[in-house]
Structures are given as structure tokens and as C-alpha cells.
Image (cartoon, rainbow, N blue to C red; front, side, top):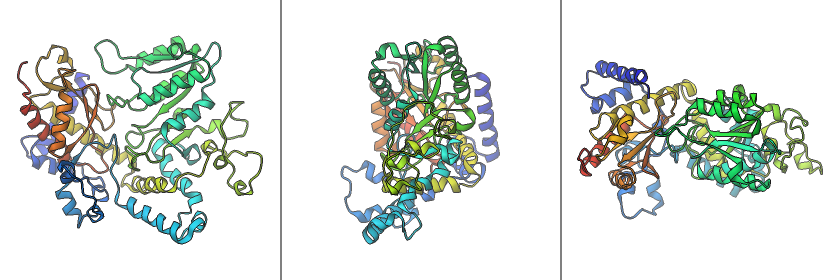
Length: 495
């Protein structure tokens, strides 16, 4: 965290505080000022807010009538503070309605729903209907994206095409603390090619005493070892620390050395601006249940640059696993014996995608597409929310500056997420002293009080205000409750 960036952040909030005529960032009136005057927006009323009573009750109701609140105001009064959209986004109000509509169409029309849908959502075209909004979020043409399967499945399928190791160029450059499913995928792909993962996986780590991998270290490694690297694959946003990796510079450096470049965008899509086509990314994968709010385990997606799919010969001999939903839709139901790939990312699809997960994704993508001011406005509000949350957290007695972590002996926390623009919406709080179980205790006590964050071992609690549905008041309440919890646990007291 540079001193100039931190100073600019503090100056911004000082100006806003002065404009509000409030005395403290944690004043409820200041949060109200931010929500209504300085940084209004979001579509909170379009989402179902988890109930505090359900989270804190020993038993959950199975009465289906409880699933529909009597009014938005009643739901708001019982709403928990949900800062966990980086793990699972909330349900928008149209999702359940649209799922029920599809069930009715299935019941009333059966197979005819594929081509004769009373609401204009023909099942055979449902995946294609999602593509314009997805393309806008990743910075591509609709033909470069597709809805399919799950993130790790898509990663495997695309690596079968784009990871083609040779005797001299076989390594995969990645971060040492990648999400475990990615690590398992990379190791198993190496093994499928008869390679030793220990020799194949080139692991990048932060420097001693640091929490983030420096961009210059990644670029230097690519320059020095590029001739042996077959694939470079990083996350757009690191799941544990919240660090944003620079997609453009890494992709350009890797291409200069002849490497293929892929990206895991699980924590990036719907969170940070993306320009996959312009930056020349070869392929990317993502899930849809975090910032895209499509529901637990919902259908995932992927991007393949048009340079690989615009013509049948574009893959230049690279193998592709084919299926009938990757075949030209004009002749698909003629059942030809020979595969004719769709000229686009959809040629990597295999089977008829599941409609119910698609419709929950579609319902959410409609909100992104209709957001006033587009994603740029949504991102601006996200930066305000996360900046406000971070500034309030830094004002607590239990906060420890990152530079002083090794010298601190008291119970407390620091923030290991970098400042904007090297972060998205997520803040990762590292609880101190490490390895003492403090994070789990804090997590449980927050939940008891209706504040939902996300625990990640070792010692990190992730708090993520999502601009689509969170408020500044959510952030203020979360900080207030965390302060209470830390004081209960003896924050500020010497061990």
C-alpha cells in the first residue's frame, strides 16, 4: 500500500465527511448520506435478502409460505448484513418466478418448449440469449463466449485443446496458492501427458514477508523462462487475498514468448472491468454463482478468442472434444455424421445445457444489462462501498497496519487486500496472532449477530460489499458489530 494512495483515499473520505456535516465515518447519518446523496444506486429492491431470524434460529422453517415476504419493507427489517457475494451472490426476485414459469411450460407443453415457448424463451436458444450480456461483462463479442458446465470442467476441456506440451515447452505458470480445484486440474492435466506435476507446475509466490505476487516478478519469470512455458494461467482476482492481476500486461508478455494464456475469472466477472478480446486472451473460464448471482452451482461459462474459432482451420491441428451442441445449429437436428463446428466459442459446447440454471443466470444478466450507466457506474459504486468499508475498518482499535503485523502481539486484524485498482469488491481480513483460531471465533460471533462474511483458512475472513445489492449502511453495521466482537475477545489487550 503506497503512502500516496493511502493519503488520497483518506483525503477523499475527509471531503465526503465534511460535505455530509457528520463527524464520523461510522455515523449512521453518514452512511445514509452516502446511500442517498453521494453514491446512490444499486438494485437492492430487486434481490431477496437473507433473513437474520433464519440465520440466528436453531431451526429453519420448511413452510413454503415463509419464502415470500409480505413486503420488501418487512424483508428489509429482518435482513442480515450479507457481505458474502464473493462466495455466493443473492437471489434476484425474478429468478424464482422464471424457474416456475419454465416448470409450467414443461408441464403444459412438454418437448415443444424447445421451439415454441409462450414467453419467447425457446429452450433451444436459451444459452444464446445469455451471450450478449456475458460478452459485455468480459469485453468480447457474443460469439466468443458460451454457457456450459462448471468452471473446472470447462478448464479441463479447454486445456485439452490449448495445453499441448512438447519436449522443450511443457511448463504451466501459475500462482502457488491458486484455488485448489485449479491446482488439481493442472496437476492431473500434466499427468495425462505423462509429465511430473512437480516439474511441470511453475509456481509463483509472493516475496518473503509479502502477501501479493508482484506483477514485475510474474513478467520477469515469463521473460526468463518463457521458452519452456506452454501455458500461463492466473486468476483475474486471487480468491484468498483479493488481489487483481493485470490481465493485459501478463497476456502480452506471455504471447511475446510464444505461450498460450488462459484466465480463471471466477472472482473477476461481474466484479472488475474486463477486456478479454482487446487484450488477446486465448481462453478464460468462470462460474456464475458469485458476482453473477445465478445461484449455487449454476451453469458456468467460458471465452475463446475468435482468432482460434473464426475458421475451421483456425485451431491449427489442436484437438477439440466435440458434441452436438457445438455443431452448426442450422443442421444440428438433421443429425449429420460429420461435425461442423459453430464459428465461435460455442463449438466447444457438448450437450443441451440445463434450462433451470440457465434461466436463473438469464434473470440476473438482465439486471446487469439494464443497470443505469452500465457496468462503469456499477464499478464506481463498488469502489465507493469497498473504500468506505476499508476506511471504517482501519479506524477500529483492533486494526493493525500491515507493515506492523510482525511486531504486533495483540489480538487484532489487518487487511491483506491491496488498494484500488489492485482489488475488486473483496476485502480480506487476516486475524492476529495467526494460527490461534481467532478468525473462526470472530466468524461465528458475527453470524450470531446477523453479519455474514466468508471464512478462508488460514486466518482470513472475507468481507465483500456487492454494489448490486449492498448498502453503505450494511458496511457500517458490519464494522460496528466487528468492533463489538473484537472488544469481547479482548482486542487491544496484550497476550
